[in-house]
Amino acid sequence: MEPHILVIDDEPQILRALRTILTAKQFRVTTASRGGEGLTLAAAQPPDLVILDLSLPDMDGVVVCERLREWTQAPIIVLSVRDGERDKVTALDKGADDYLTKPFGIEELLARIRVALKHSAQAQGAPNPVISAGPITIDLARHVVTRDGEEVKLTATEFKLVAYLAGHADRVLTHQAILNNVWGGADIDHTEYLRVYVGQLRKKLEANPDQPRYLLTEPGVGYRLLTDV
Image (cartoon, rainbow, N blue to C red; front, side, top):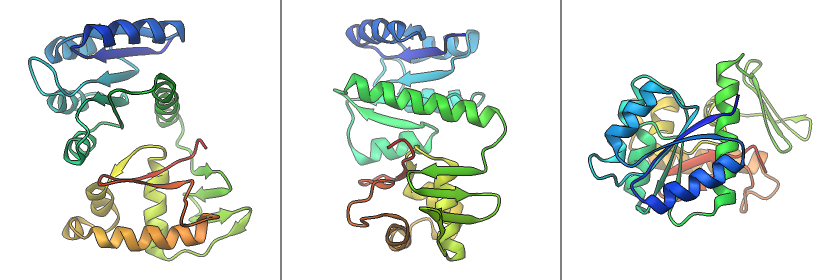
């Protein structure tokens, strides 16, 4: 069946454009111009993916995101004119999977949709214990990381960090989410831990640590392990 995408946005031109483009790419598209309408449609016809604007006339998109996350794990990609770090962090912490700032490139959006749907399908099937990012392979079950086929020695914390990133590959993970899951809630404000450990991982895993291709920084927001390079 064609994947079902729900677009919630109050700009008619955006709705028209996305309906036309996504339908041409063999997606089934439902649109809503208000948050409440979007939630009703999502409940009636559960989507495989949601594209969500944050600035809606009846409620903040972050609230829509929270309510969707009460019952669905469908990927949520935020499209918004809000480009502040706080807006991005809040949306991601409330359950969004990705964030694009308007105006956006349609090819980039389509790429993000493909990645989100791929990971969603994998999550619904048997969990994949081996994640690959270019020459890097992370075996979550065996606790082994290799680069170009050679095992890389990591400390326990380094492995825990790269395993958390790999378990959510291609998603933007906020500083707070990473710190909470890797170090625990008591260290949630210690972003310097992240800078140090990500730097150590890049030296061990990236061909050029100063220009990383896989362990990417999302400025002011967090990090992403990119597998589709």
